[in-house]
Length: 82
Image (cartoon, rainbow, N blue to C red; front, side):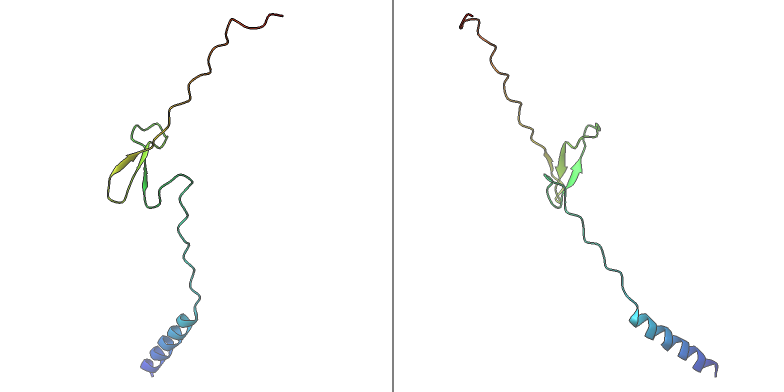
């Protein structure tokens, strides 16, 4: 009698487990704009600004920041007089 009770409880639990709803796994978030998918951000100097990134093979790639444009030329002293 004891074995039948245990088997009945086991089959009941197995039947209920088969009907249980599974949670959907969340998909990975896309990388932010400008990031390389599959890379890890790197802050080499510790200032809180990302300086580059490491690819999956462990190679560091620095972010290229273009130099600022040259300043406009100073106004000329020659020209129309009022």
